[in-house]
Image: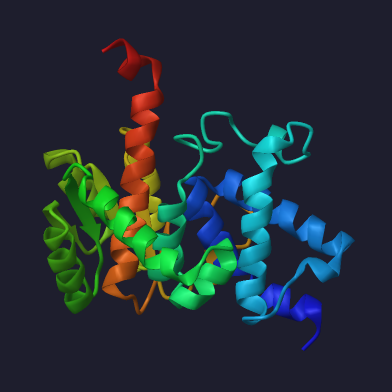
Length: 268
């Protein structure tokens, strides 16, 4: 397999990680674009000691960590200042949490990606866990047509300390449930029971109120092309509980920080 084929194979999941890290599609894709430009200029930047995928994530981390130090970088104007480096850059523990829980890297691979000692990884993961546990509980709307998957997600969400206001199997059910109580988080499947779209349902709801959304799909690569407006937070089917915890926590983290940084929040 050629170098370009290796990059293409792992690019969708790198986009997912980048978007989860920044909390935004445009910001996440801009950092991935900057990494690809650097790799095109110098292919020796890709260290494949732990495989091509880990090497790409390592190079991405190096680019992501240095962009804010270079205000002349082409990537900076693409990013909305309120979206770039929320809370003074996502801390190292959060990167460890995402790499372990969302991307499934081993602790050794995470140490390689972040250029830290292996012993530090577990400490950083524990620190992230404490931060995630401090998240304020919220009301969650589930949009999922598969009964057993919905039950699993509902149980997991409740164990994270959140309240599930209802489970919708169709577009119309989702809209009706949201009218009874405005959710603080939406977890939505893409393809629903009656052939309707969870994406369409969410877009309709977002016209009336603002809420973080995590999409669940068996085909995440279809929504990670960078060719159209796409979800910032994606969970792949089948999913691991740790992955749901990681993505939900990230979505709520960015929503909370966005509110804290808004003029209205500052004036209150």
